[in-house]
Length: 162
Image (cartoon, rainbow, N blue to C red; front, side, top):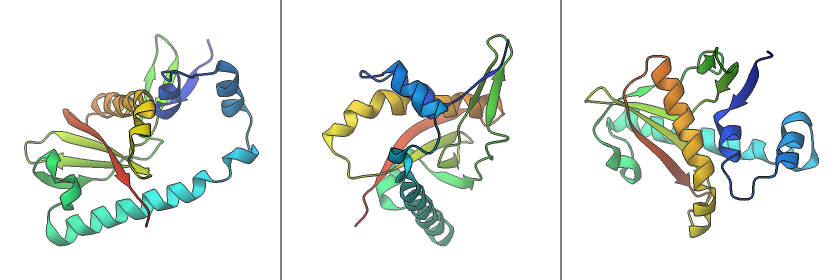
């Protein structure tokens, strides 16, 4: 049996109310489609947001006020690269991948996984919640399987560009 590789984000897409198998297949198998041009800027903004959060923690030893409800943070965890942050399930031949945007270790030694979203938070994001829940839980599953456990908190962090 050939191994199936799927990311946590793509796995999450399967949980969407309006999931279309044909659209999903095209997205996975056809590269350089015209509607795939813009996501690069969002990755850049997510990277910048992460740098702001990290610099604030390094300077002040606390995260910015807008994310301080997750508990007492001991350290920022360097998120393993894609070639280390994965799980292979031998029974199903599934290679589950994906890399969270941010991980912290709390003073109680548990871990927090955050995923950044570059958008203004509105009620419309509720429609995307099933996808994000699967994505974050995939990250938690991978993290615990590679020894980063226990995971005590998963969250979405919305950064709204000015």
